[in-house]
Every structure is written in structure tokens, then in C-alpha cells.
Image (tube, rainbow, N blue to C red; front, side, top):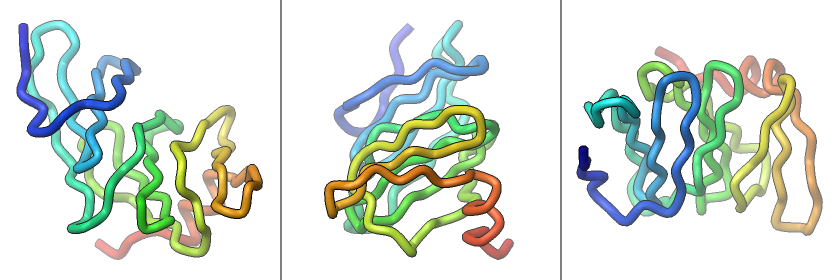
Length: 123
């Protein structure tokens, strides 16, 4: 199968029955067996996104606007935006902790439960 990602893909992630294609303009989720599109989530206008990482039931990307964005793994809907940081590279995730590199040459360990609670978007 082949699938249109709408933009050049800079990273792939296969996790929990989904194949995620990261572009600078957004993330596209596909069924890895047949290539069927599952969801698309676009970056805000003028913002470029890093590669996506799985973080529990969320997908997290770093934006060129120095914010972290979380999307629902199952549906791609925005869950939270962490704006009180200056992160510029793709994060890593393990056991409920999100690790991110900041513009000031530091690595930060952020508790996912805490940042999702503090940065949750209104429905």
C-alpha cells in the first residue's frame, strides 16, 4: 500500500496498532496493515512540528514556537499545549515522564500527569 502524507515525512513511529508519519506541518496516523488513514492533526499556522513520540495514550511533539503539543493517540485531537517552556527538539517519553531538550541547553524531565493537568485545553 501507499498513502499520501500531504508533506515530506521526516519520521515514522509504529506504536499500538498505528503508524504515525510526522511532517513539519502535522502528524498523520495510518493503519499499518492496509494504509487506511485514521486521523490527521495539523500544526498551527506558521509552526513546524518535530517528530512525534508516544507518551501513554498521547502523541507529543515540540513546536517551532517552543511549545509542547499533545494529541490523543486514538483520534489525533489536541489534548494540551505546554507553553511555559522553551523546547525545540523532539521529546522522549518513558514511564509517565516526558524528557525534553530546551533552548538553554538543558534536558528537562516533566511528569506527564502534571503537565497534562496544568496545560489541558478547554473542550
